[in-house]
Length: 507
Ligand SMILES: *[C@@H]1O[C@H](CO)[C@@H](O)[C@H](O)[C@H]1NC(C)=O
Ligand SMILES: *[C@@H]1O[C@H](CO)[C@@H](O)[C@H](O)[C@H]1NC(C)=O
Image (cartoon, rainbow, N blue to C red; front, side, top):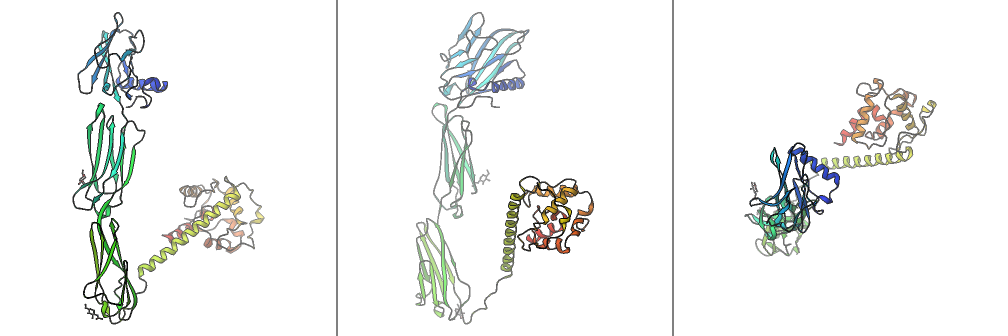
């Protein structure tokens, strides 16, 4: 439990009175004792620290004397201050002598808090407030003084060469902090952090960590972060880096289609290589004999102007960087006649179909959003504000637009009217996005709130009564053209099966 003051603020006097009260209550509740203290006080060196202590509920108890005891981290308890009502305050020999005093003068036996001025890193430890009482004997409360020092954090990657043994690829350090920082690593690489701490000057600690892994070519450029958490930092400090793994070129030759037939012109082989450092030289070689005159080599490209027996051979591409050589070869087979061209594979046909479907889905969504946007402008953000039109207008408009982008303008008020009058729970949320969970909820609520079964598409396909007053094709045509996922279109609720069938097409 941290009941201490903010690290920058020192101690109690800077805390809000409410916070202090809460701290006291918490401690009292936790200990169940009559000696109230803070569990922990934080301070930077040079500040003045108040270590508070109070004896609550002294009724029926004789307080005779209070003693402050200091217990260093690794050391024995020593008395540092004593107060007796008859003999006054006395400060004993201690590291804090001269910097310590009771906060009130004269000291109070029921709240003998002390102040330590110009606090030092070495003042860290436990401060014990002990009352001598009658008849219950000694009672005490313990406060830990935690000294803080802001660490200097740093991190760097180590450039390594791909290999088979684990090596340090990144380093991170949190220097001269108090208490010790926690260092952790976040990386998609497959390695481990090893952390060591060493004592620095003035009770501070330097924590350093190295990230070890077996470096592989594929690890080059991977993200790695060192995360340093420290008591003095409101949040962890994160150092984002990229691993640097050097490796010799990895070469592939692309462009050979196994269809080099006699007389074919302008076939191209391309030599592709990755490497760190970036490869500089690319060399094409032929396995046997000289490079034929029909072959033109330019950088990483090898072009056969005309296929003949001379290129019935093996071509080698060699790529160099500082670390070495990478090579790849391809054996070209020259045929007498060309192989039949392969048509598009089933896979690519399916791919193309899926692509078209996705495109259509995107267009449909765009249309739906456009319409929603426009309707919002027309209707405002709340429930429909217009009055329902008189029933005689339920006749189908003769000039109904037939584009897929246009909803039937005369029809929309109709549907709202239908909702506002028939539905036990009016649909007011017209702003919901299509596909939104709220929209689903809305629809479910609407269905469950329906006064009769006729508009439950699960059980009844019959359209709502007002539809019969329309042109017979009125409810058929828009079903195909309107985006059924558009939950603003109330017909979705009516023809619920539509709203399920159509999205299935997009899967
Ligand atoms: C990392 O540590 C885990 C368990 O602590 C161990 O199984 C794994 O081999 C270590 N990996 C490396 C690269 O040291
Ligand atoms: C190319 O070489 C292969 C053997 O490696 C041979 O079977 C084939 O007939 C040769 N093609 C021509 C056109 O010479």
